[in-house]
Length: 131
Image (cartoon, rainbow, N blue to C red; front, side, top):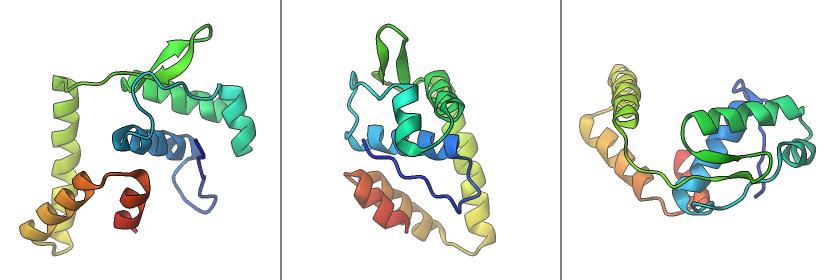
């Protein structure tokens, strides 16, 4: 697992770490049960403070993507649809739809773009389609 931080981004490092891990989980590159590096190891690999990685892991655990403890280590959790996730999805999509409308994007273009991203089969394909 090789994470890359964008030093020029306004997105905090812990959020960048969180987002990349979620993308890898969704692409299958990090399957359920897969172990992640320790906080200390990942912080060392990325050249960031251990608190930064700890904050990302804590966020991912809170959101239900990761599980584990100091003894067992951190690993990807088996996920399913929950009412909480569905509400979050609706809230975030509503905002993205509003922003897209304000910028002049048609419904057809929005839906097509969503379909392309949803069908992306790997992390690299997702990165290319976003860029």
